[in-house]
Length: 187
Image (cartoon, rainbow, N blue to C red; front, side):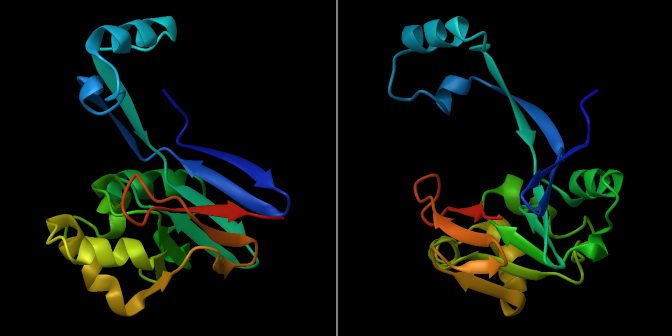
């Protein structure tokens, strides 16, 4: 069994990674290594002791505590997995002051609401990139429309290089999605 969470410090900022779930995905070459042929992909996988017939995905939302803020970066595929890891780490959903979405793929937004459609993090403000929001708002995506759009009144949309909390700054990481953001921790 893998641990549900790991704690470490970045200066004075407490960071906890949360193992919210895992799944096996067949045929990883349909996702990764698209710039090479099947033989090259298989050879590279074998040389690095990585199976070429399946990839194991791990979903690890991250909790950051700084200056009285309890910030959850992404929410995993579903609320149950993230909440279980969060509780194992000694936190409750009501402790979360901010939920920051790096991008809008389902394994990052799936835990925004519980199975019955309630907000998983009832006291949280939400933060995401403006470019990411605009791109997904125009797509007609069911996940975005169900999980994210209803939170718009409580969502701050930021540009790169915006400090969202002391020591936490948005960083442009466009490419994985149109407005994908990373966040730099400074302490």
